[in-house]
Length: 347
Image: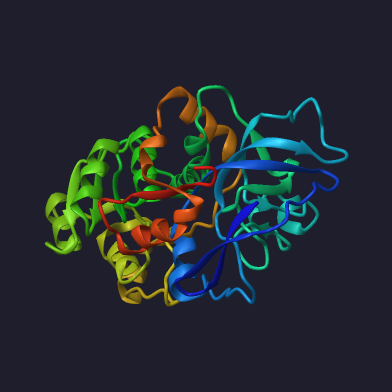
């Protein structure tokens, strides 16, 4: 089979490798679609994400879905069947550590997360994964939509942390795939006014389609000043940062009202978060970090299946595996109106 490997920053190569057999409790998937996430782009452009750097060629890709083509020993034949489309939960917790036992498996101390060294990702034709981390899907969800369930789960976890109430004013900075999904979820939660901030007008246009009321191009206006103008100097109840945290976390703090909430979803390239401490302290803000997702697949699937959240449209650019370099180039340089570049390994 073919698989892509990152050998260093900006150095992606496609190679032929041997197929793997499933072990106990594992399935083999024919990968249907893999999204290029912002965290993939960190590793691709900078050689690391959050300080974790590959020490050998690494297959990226954790936003993924595929069809089961083989079942390993011990897999539940009633739940998992050949040909079945499943979403790939990229995180496999141990189930035994303190966070797992207290209901926080996303904080597992021994978490395996595909596409993050040392665990190989899904940007390949066939992928072996633990069956318990494969989520069977109802009819009507496409492979691309199934792959986008992972960013929807991330957005859902962030929205839950934001705890938006009916009538709240909410700010979202960063209107990539996850930011757009947060906009949609916050609209469904009953926000009064949603302010979307980005540097690209095509993303702001999409944010309006997903439910944003006020659109601010950060290259053309001061986001904080504009937010204060729209809220008569009060600020927003909740601010969510969904970009690469290059000054945007500080903007969230400055734009939040007294006693407001800030949720950090983006990953800073420099692995440092800077905010004005005086503003955060004087406002007595609650500042939360959002990490991946928690028990998100069932509600995410329900939202997608009901049509309340549209996922396939996030995939603005689709490539076969042989053109994986184009996918990463478009995604990392924000070319051609890209929101999510998706790799379809079989073309």
